Length: 308
Image 1 (cartoon, one colour):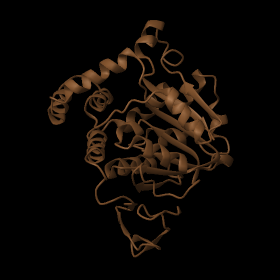
Image 2 (cartoon, one colour):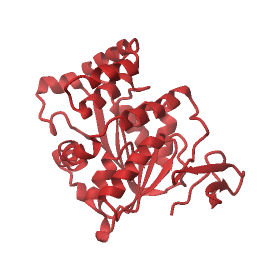
Image 3 (cartoon, helix red, strand yellow):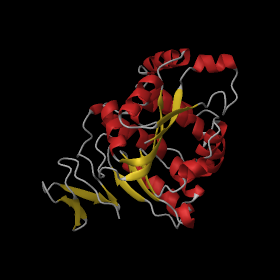
Image 4 (cartoon, one colour):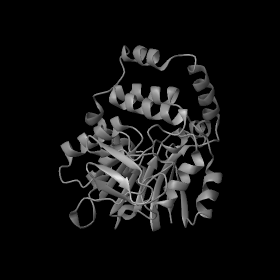
């Protein structure tokens, strides 16, 4: 069982009468549906509140997610992406026993990690952290249905105040999360804080370079004139998959899409003690896009492998 820390004073939390209480400042945190609520009563900013609500509704609205998990991970998953870049995922995951999935969503990477299995034939200890209670409940349902031997723990919390001790994990996965929160750099600081020396971060965010990203940002600005509920209703009447609807709504109506380039992020990680910051190329090596298409997309949705 995890040792949690207070998000107010960083003191140790103790389980007491169905809730958690800080040994130092006596702050209390409830447990709802078996999931510790290690978060302020409301996320700190309006943008983060919107993010939690948006993604809880987005993933909770569609019922096909368990059916396309296997197909999606084969096409877009970690093993495919790493192999396209000449990296063996088994080597990356070897000896990694304690995992934090920071912003786990409905469970795409949780599923892939559990399917890969852990060292010595046992499943890894995976802590699934998310701002949305709905996402955590869906993730847990998937895990219990498909991987009854899993050792996952679920906690509601923010990436900007991770309720876990320093050097908690030897592998952290944080993909498509940081660019959705108000305090981008505070979120990054927290992610780095919980990774052990010798640990690994699999990381993905929106980049800043490329014509596609400029047009993408313009498209998002235009979409602010269209209510999310209306767009969701229109898309529900179209003959496209639930996955395609989710991608469109995510890209067009999520609260934030901060854009930071690879060079700046590489400098940040190196300053934090990283020994390797690798850019994982997906558009050319993974999807086989033409040189013109790769140029058009620029950095796009950047994936990185960071070793400390």
